[in-house]
Length: 256
Ligand code: XBP
Ligand code: MG
Image 1: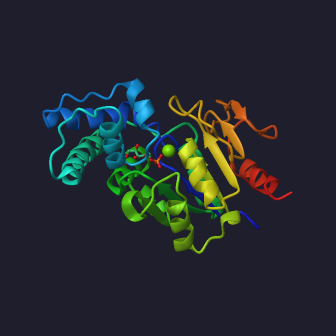
Image 2 (image 1 turned 180 degrees about the horizontal axis):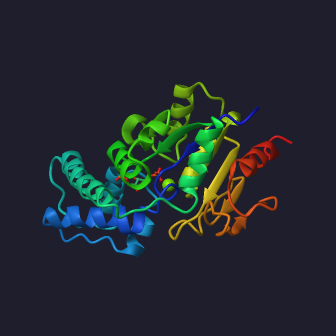
């Protein structure tokens, strides 16, 4: 089936947001609440196994801070912490502190010119997506994406397929008309279980050693003509940066 749409993950894919963005925002929210919780770079790397900020806080309590005396209304407590974290994170984005990754602006511009449909499928909170698109991409960038599927809109977060299935269903797309862009094991699992056969991974500091079984190609970034990517897994067919020609070949290769 012809390629019709590109579906992008957000955190780690459109921008390298986790170590110096989300993690810092979580720690600021903990400090505001008078908690002595400090998520180090190393601990946060372990916590990223669980997607979703609220789910991640609960995972932290379950597995890394069992002694914490939990309030009666734990869900509300976590939700309040997470809302404070989101305020810190969106403020960081509004200050332009988190740029989009190499090649993202160029590829999106090419895709829009060619008429390829664009969507987002992410675990993060919708407000975070809006802030990143507006402040790190273009003030109108939210309009570039036909569907922005984000956060709690689906019952199960990645690695469940729900968020990709929801986006494709809203757009009336078949999985084999799409390419998914991801950065993590959870993300590849989600897209793959949603039957998307073409999955392009750009790794980052936290995900470089993830299991990317199910991905079509794993590279370190989308690249630019003067800043080629490095292939971690798969064959790039002689290309040095991701452009539409390469995506057509990648997608075509998926259907020999
Ligand atoms: C990454 C996530 C999110 C972020 C934190 O999402 O798992 O939970 O780490 O954002 P993706 P929230 O890679 O799917 O974009 O605190 O808003 O969940
Ligand atoms: Mg991601």
